[in-house]
Amino acid sequence: MRNIAVILAGGIGSRLDKNHPKQFFKVAGKTVIEHTVTVFEEAKNIDEIVIVANAAHLSEVETLVLKNDWKKIKKILVGGAHRYESSLSAIRAFEEEDNVNFILHDAVRPLVSHRIINDVLTALSNYNAVGVAIPAVDTIVEVENGVIVNIPDRSRLYHAQTPQGFKLHTIRNAYAHALQDPTFKATDDCGVVRKYLPDEPIFVVTGEEANMKLTYKEDAFLLNKYSNNTNLVV
Image 1: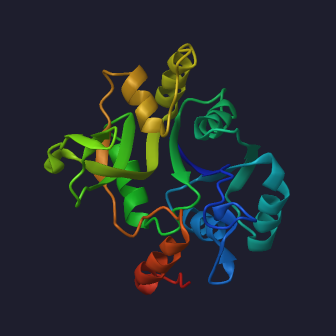
Image 2: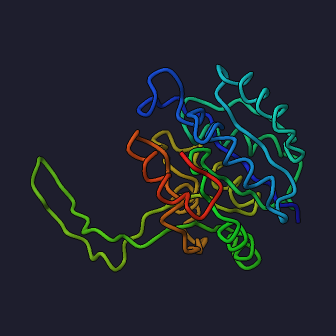
């Protein structure tokens, strides 16, 4: 069973930097995507890395691959306008393979740990779909028209993270069903499995607060806080 990490870097969101997507934001002299890819490059149980990037930034990714001399990068693919299209691009690049663990990770989560990656791969020995999440610490409210209409039980609520891991045939099958649905929408890959393969259990690995998603400028300060235990310093 080969373990393939897919780094999803196709986003063009500019809430962090108006001039550049957030995966190219500089942290400690390197871009966020460089820090992220390096984690997987150094993970002993990852056999291959695929980067899915926006077409407008392919040359930047190629330059970073050469600069860092990453050995595990085997494919650089073009993503789509939506996140699920980037996942699909990677899935379709391995149409002839089945004996694969697919690990999909957001490029803008540079502090993912080897422990999380290891736990996801271990869980894939027993499950076909694995998510990562941390318990919600704040009360979550459901609001309609500016009014609270429901307060769910917080003990059952978690914040989802990546990586998300799948047997390749499972995530491929989920998307095959999803693409037949004219109302299909997705924000993450576990959600696709949950909706279109409802009988497939999705095991949850415990994430880490440091495994945060870089979205706003304020997040850079939080990265600095968590970087005390890493080599990543803003």
